[in-house]
Image (cartoon, rainbow, N blue to C red; front, side, top):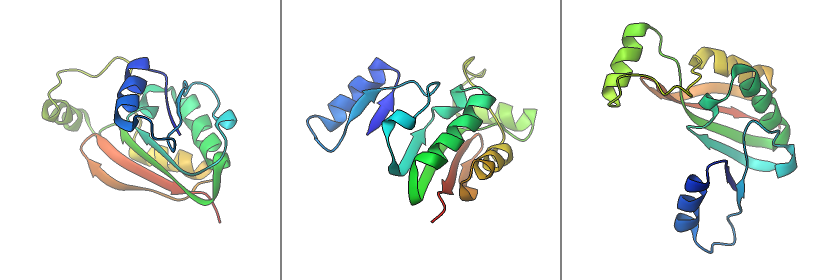
Length: 142
């Protein structure tokens, strides 16, 4: 299953996956609880959660932990807060921007890993980082 609130993004997904019956594309806003979507072995998010406010991020992490099958994995490729203003300026330059997207709500890697652990995900960690991009992972207990 793949979800997005953007019809343009869903249109790209339809082009990519065509008539593949294994892929269920749905309109869904991550501001809404994900419980109705069912349970999953893996939940992957790419550059989406950083648009949510901090309280919703924390609630979503708990929902993901609850929706994962035992031993399931959550992977979140995300835009994260830099360690300093200079590092953030360097990051923006590296990605060809002069300012942040006004919809971004950036949080440090450390804070998000802590929130993931508090939500019930085990072995929560940042397994890759390049400047303001990071891959955060956590597993459902077995």
